[in-house]
Structures are given as structure tokens and as C-alpha cells.
Amino acid sequence: MSEAVTYSRYLKIEELLSLQQPRDEVEHDEMLFIVIHQVYELWFKEVLHEIDYCGRLLGEGDASRAQHTLRRILTILKVMVSQLDVLETMTPTEFLTFRERLESASGFQSDQFRQLEFALGRKSWASVERFPEGSRARLALERRWNRPTLWDAVLAYLAQEGYAVPADQLERDVTAPVGRSEALQTVFIELYRGDSRNVELCERLVDLDEGIQEWRYRHVKMVERTIGSKSGTGGSAGSAYLRSTLNQPLFPDLWEIRAAL
Image (cartoon, rainbow, N blue to C red; front, side, top):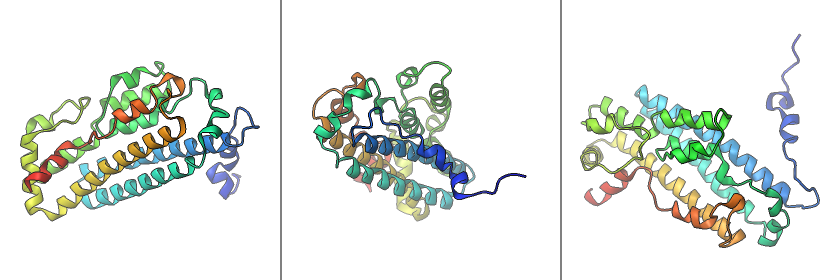
């Protein structure tokens, strides 16, 4: 007879609480650092789960549920941004007490964040090659590399709705960055001027784009506040690299059309 389902067994609490293992228990703030980053990885997992679901819903023509899913993602992003407030309670000197023990470990190595970028249309083969062949991370990124992005799901949905989405956009190389298309912008201008239902869907995508940009900005400021212009752990460029990722919209056409409406 199987054991009864309990809160602890269902959520694997024993295993979960065993995963926080500071390299030196003397340093008080290392526990906070570990917990925050483990929670981020769990949120990345959930956001990827929701993005995949949103893409499936759009494929089924269910824009209402897709919008609901996008709103959930946006709410999660707000929580992710607010977690930086908690991390910023750690002063630069408190971080320095254990920073050296991180050795080559760096958030730059988060394959789930790279998967999130891939799912939203920002793919880089260099990100795949950072992980050993055959590893869980490498295999996951290779799958994401070859899959259509959320933007591709949106364009396919709009084509199903009867919009004249250019063939080169519907058949684009899904491993390439999402670029600007004047022909596609014409389609979106038509949509915005006469289709309030799908305008709401597009505006949720703009919210998502803005939310990701906000998270990137807050992350940069947190890093600058903690280590200033120093190199990041693992030899990364630290805040200099992170700053280079700012102001790069995921869905540029949805921003370009604002001046024409």
C-alpha cells in the first residue's frame, strides 16, 4: 500500500531543504544568496512552462487563454523583480565575505535563463556551446534552438485569423533573431486600428517585452550596487556585459508601429 500524500511528500520538502548548502556556514549572507538564486531557477522553470503553454494555446486559436497565461507570466516577472529588493539588502562588504568561494560559478551559466531568451526569440549558438555535449543543459538548449519562438506562434495565430502575415515571416529561420519588418508592421497597424480583441493580445506581448527589459535593468543596477565595475564571477564582464543587453526589444515591430498609430 502506497504512503498517504502529505504536504511534505507532495512538495519533496526534505529534499528541497537539503539543497541549500553554503560552502562556509560561518558567512551569514551566503544562505540568502543561495536561496534567492535557487528560487530564480524555479521561476525560470515555471515561466518556460507557461511560455510553452501559451504557444500551444495560440496554435489552437485560443487567444483568451493565451492572454490569461501571458498575464500570469507578467505577474511572475514582477515577483522576480521584487526579489532583487531582497538581494539588495546584502551590502557589498557582506557579499565579499563569500564571493571568492563562488570560484567560476556565475549567473552567466544559468541554462534556464538562456532557454528563456531562446523561447522569446533571442538565440545564440555560443550560449549552447558553453555547456558540455550531452549534458542536461546542452540538450535542453539544443531543443530550444530548433523550436519556434513565442513570436513565431503569434505570427502563425494571426495568419489563422486571416491577416496577411508575410510569407518570409511565417517561414523565417527560427534560430535567427526576431528582426524588424515593414511589411509586418503594416499588418499590425491594420490590426491595431480595427481589432480590439487581438490588440489586447499584442499589448500583453508589449507588457512581456517591457517586463523582461525591466528585469534586466534592475539586475544591472543590483550588480553595480554590489560589485561596481568589477569583473563578474567566472571571469564574466559583470555589469559591463549586462548593460550591453539593455534596450533591446524582443518584439521590435510592436514598438515601431507606435509612431504610425
